[in-house]
Image (cartoon, rainbow, N blue to C red; front, side):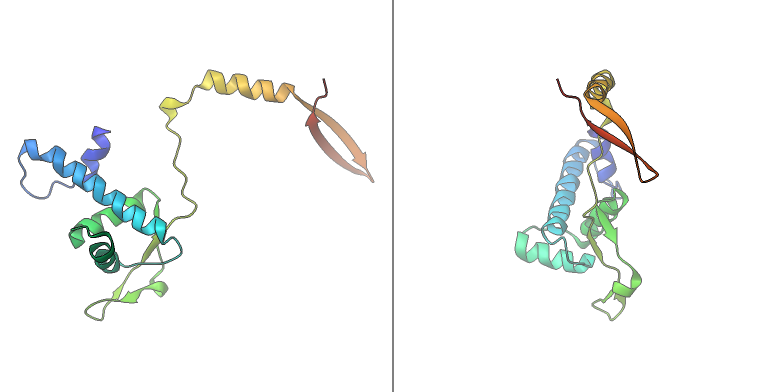
Length: 152
């Protein structure tokens, strides 16, 4: 957990050592707010500036635009957000095109291998296989393999 928080806060300003944990927690909270914003609007694309405006108005959170950009970059690296194609870009405040991001609907939280009990997994897998009967059937010259639960 500490290593994850350490990666959230990019130490680009001189902070005292005792202030770092608070800054890391704040960065983690900001990242969650940005992720929730995208998750609730999963079918829409947003520029970082649009996220900034919306969070400021709707969520009543005070976040810097650079913090939102950092959160979006981190979430994209984690696969939770998708950076859209240039063709989907939107004009920004100064007329320049801005890239947009959207929530990745296919993102699934990965299993933590530390929490997986491989012995239990193998035992359950072998139990499942022992309850399945395999039958090879040939129909009109085509081989089929039929699996069904064994009857007791």
